[in-house]
Amino acid sequence: MTKTIFGKKLLMIATMTVLVTGLMFAATLDDAEAKKAKTGEHKLKCKSIGSFFPPTAAGVFSSSEGKCSAGLSKVSIATISGIIEGAPDDGCWTLFSLGDDFAIGKKGFIMLTSTGIQCFKNESGDYLTDDPGTNFCVTGDPTSAFTSEVIGTYEISVGLVKDTPVIGGEGDFVSKANHCDSEAPYGNSFTTKLEGTIVFPG
Image 1 (cartoon, one colour):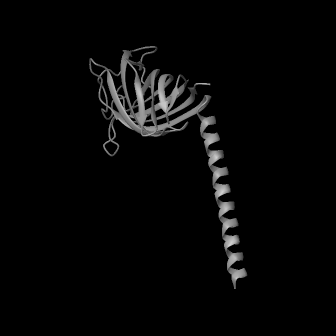
Image 2 (image 1 turned 90 degrees about the vertical axis):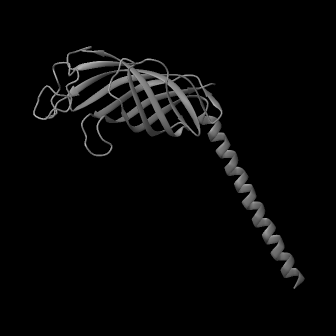
Image 3 (image 1 turned 30 degrees about the vertical axis):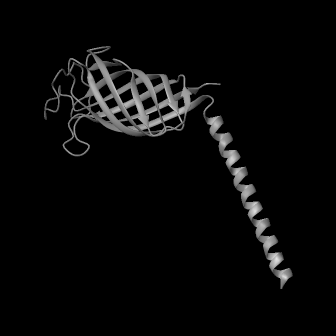
């Protein structure tokens, strides 16, 4: 009986030792991966959906919610953009950051600037050949803007992800806007896909 109990105790101790050793090994791998993911240049991908206010003298303010890779996870994004109408072509605007835009969440943040070209389409999906001005969402008017697409680039200035500084990064983004939707997410809603790099020290 004593041998059986003693044998069971040895088995339990051996099993616990294997489990603890396994957990320690897994934790070591996780730590190594975490450190590796925060060193040097890495890929950054973000997807978001949001809305923006009509242009004012102060610019265009937009806000969105999304998810980014590289350890950022869920983020809230805010931008304030200036506009150059009719550039580079009629029917398009140039958008540019008036200051630092940001993406922030529980695991960190990045600050960045961007510039892009926004071109407008009418109700039929044809590109406008003239500046829409304030002519939006007029049914039956081929010169009225209903949707648009922004193609541009971004550049990261600073940030912090899981206590690790961010020192740079750059890439491209595409935003698609619906200016006239009467259902959720409603007019002036947009989706954005961003892809490029994020740079950590080292």
